[in-house]
Amino acid sequence: MKIIKHLIFSTILFCCLLTIVIAQTQKTFSNPLLPGGADPWCIYKDGFYYYTNTTGRNITIWKTDNIARLKTAEKKVVFTPPVTGLYSKELWAPEIHFLQGKWYIYFAADSGKNINHRLWVLQNSSADPLKGKWILKGKLATPDDKWSIDGSLFQHNKQLYFIWSGWEADVNGQQNIYIAKMKNPWTVIGVRVKLSSPELPWETIGALHDANNPPQVNVNEGPEVLAHANQLFLIYSASGCWTDSYALGMLTASAKSDPLNPASWKKSLQPVFKQSIENRVYAPGHNSFFKSPDAKEDYILYHANSKPGQGCGGFRSPRAQLFTWNKDGSPNFGVPVKEGEILTLPSGTGN
Image 1 (cartoon, rainbow, N blue to C red):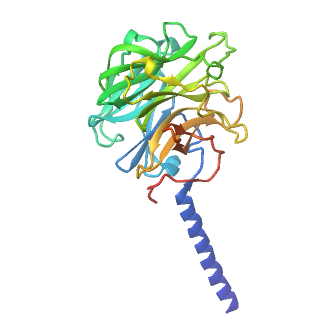
Image 2: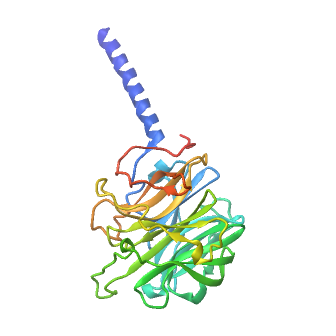
């Protein structure tokens, strides 16, 4: 009888502990969200996160109601490029947006030669981006039609603006951040305006040891805009992604100013998010942002390496963490958290 009671007690205890563990697991997550995936992008809409990242060969969307379950989330390849042609190779940094009642994906691609990198737009009229048909709306022709990657957009005072990383001319050596107005989600109009060039010491770490490339490339790329407290914050990635010094910089403008006027923007003199040797997080960058399901919290989503010297390859993995706001209204991203550190799920996340 004692043995039976002991077994019953042990079983009950085990079930209670298991329930606690499961409940705790459902309320927390840790980084990385996936084993690999550069240039992560996420949007939350109607109860679901829609996530994508660079695969290089196609465009894939993940769908989940819980960011902690990204590894097991439903996913679908929504676009496979032709074998040859101007957008057949090196598909980089896709972003998915819902605009004017339709879904759009912006991505960079080339013909197999980096000098041909340009931006392209896909469109889907379905309510669910994993359903319906994605059609190639066409090339998103930026003014001057120069090398361009990392396209994104934001709306300000009912006007759409497009931002991207590009070359001044036709020769590799420096990437700048540009902005222009949009007529609609697939058409850029007017002139391109340069908002930022790599000029500070921490922005100009980019020595290359490759006979097929320049000896040095200075980089500003991956622009994303946050609007908060009557201010606009343009967060961008600086220095070469092939270095451990890849980091995030920030431009700040008043919401009352003209985003097309370079004088409206003030550059922070130091990076706002950078590697943490103590936490073993290297080259954090190319970020995006998303809200918690209840819209009460703000999260930064970025890629990073787990070891020094891993560069721009497949070692980069997507990570997310909560960020807060400083008294002056600017974002405080803190320090990249350690892999495996237990983090609370975004508020409002269901089980």
